Image 1 (cartoon, helix red, strand yellow):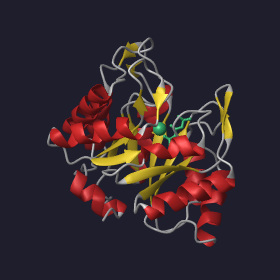
Image 2 (spheres, helix red, strand yellow):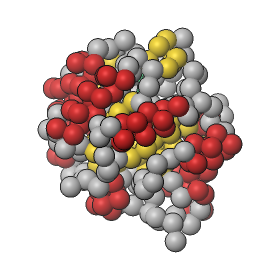
Image 3 (cartoon, protein in one colour):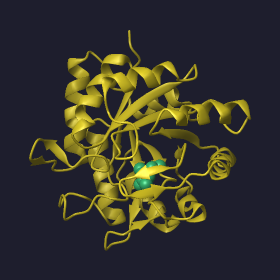
Image 4 (cartoon, protein in one colour):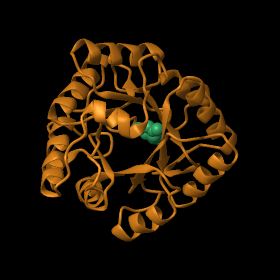
Amino acid sequence: MAEKVIVTAAVVGAEVTREQNPAVPYTPAEIARAAVDAWRAGAAAVHLHARWPDGRASQRPEHFREIIDRIRQAGSDVVIQCSTGGAVGMSVDERLGSLVDGAEMGTLNLGTMNFGDEVFQNARPDIVRIAGRLRERRLVPECEVYDAGMLDTLRWLLEKGHLAAPYHVQFVLGVPGGMSASERNVRFLLEGLPEPTHWSIAGVGRFQLPMAELALALGGHVRVGLEDNLYAAKGVLAKGSDALVSLAVDLAARAGRELATPAEARRILGIA
Ligand code: KMH
Ligand code: ZN
């Protein structure tokens, strides 16, 4: 029987805007509400970014603290994962601002890549530094893999002792400049995954739900939400990340995969 599935909700990224979808949350209160709604819809974990009230990307510790406090005040035990990717162009120091008390996981982006028309910089010494900070703070890394060579970097980090289990792998597929979101690519990536590990797929744009369906069929976990995709169906804007979580929950039921609760997700992910 396949492991229970962890649905992660990425409720806001650094790039999507309210002009594209009015449901995109900006303030800490809005982001926390989106996270709690996603948890109520079945998400066991939330992947968090922050914004300034005008929508600019923020990695300010006070924004992350307020988001986490509000999520807990609402009675949610959802697993909290903070982005150390931030936005393209931010320094590593700025990106590390998100790792505040209350975070349980932090992302670890495994390479430099074209990101649309920009460059997302993740030089190897910076990856090592972020991995070190996650270790110091006893946060479980979620390794963001956008392309096949990044799995070689994962292996290198493990060999050199910069990273050790527990860690989680998120295949983020369909970023313009990264690997596309196809079944062939997923099967190839899975062959290169170090054992033992658990993995998830975040498909970008129209690939979000097909990739969730594929991950469910192959025994993986899934990430959905407005960070990666603004639409519930072709031409239909999602009313929120919770709506996308609900669609993933339906797919999980159809695939015969039970949902992990946040407590079960902590056990699977190795969060102490
Ligand atoms: N905003 C992207 C440039 C992460 O959260 O760790 C990077 C990103 C990855 O979203
Ligand atoms: Zn992110």
